[in-house]
Image 1: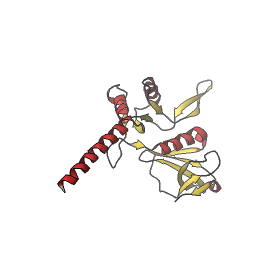
Image 2: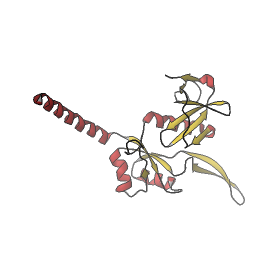
Image 3: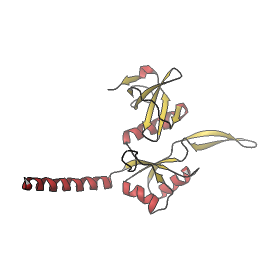
Image 4: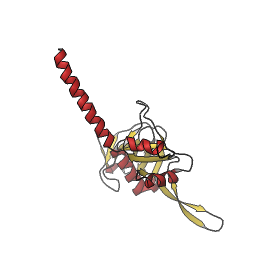
Length: 192
């Protein structure tokens, strides 16, 4: 028995080493908090270091003394998404001095990783229907899992919710936020 456990242990260590190398080069989406009104400054600094990031924004009209001005503002205050390897994401905050505070997964206490599909769906909804999206960072009751089959949001997966007797699709980024977009019920297919 002792001889059989030794090769398995070596195989385990080899696979662990390979997996570590893969995660060292694999990029993930991380969520980070920034100081008040620093979303754009942090975004610009990250881009200078060739680190991909995303700040969901929308245009609002502000009235100045004698005129109206359209201004781009963040949809979610103090939040930015960073796409990088874990090592590069940590270096942005620790070595480059960028004021980022990565969110932690509540169960593992590691940096919170957002799956690519959830981030892609969230970005798609924000870029194509920002006027119809309601952001909610509070916990919501989960509904049926759905896939949008047609319309502008075709291919988006989320949860079906009812708000004011209308059907909406909830796209959830766990432990951070939820985005809700109105979609006709006939466009949805329940997934199991």
